[in-house]
Length: 225
Image (cartoon, rainbow, N blue to C red):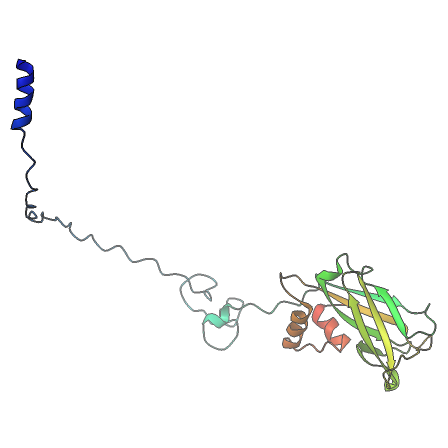
């Protein structure tokens, strides 16, 4: 009975929680100690100018092998740092001749690109055709005496190409055997990803190479003429 009375008394004496008090004011900002500024570092060593071949820090314009004015313009500057133009390489260019002696009269020639390269789709091509007398014509284009012309059709998937001959009336033209002696193909590797045959032709044009002139192409790529 006494325990019950004590429990009742405790319940009766417990009041409700009061309201939350006001937030106190922000305290003062603490002191910030800033260190002293460090000493300035030592100046760096002057670099060597690209034209300063002997590294002596002096521009040497002489009349012997120590002359640093390599372009001989009387001034030492970045133009003296440029090397000579390199020769055009032919590491990625191949050439092949197809002998036509076995062909009699024909209006079409079907030939294989795989005779030249392993993966025909990786190359751009230039085509030429020779006469027994030593004349060389670019394909496609007009041919002997302007009596007929030729077009070239390439199938890189099958690794073949076809030369069709047409008269000036655009009908098939029958070429007599012995009119032409060789078909010459120059295969230029598409070495850069995404490069196309059109890119290669544009680059040759920009370099001033007339692709219809075999001698100009051979000189540019270092091929035997």
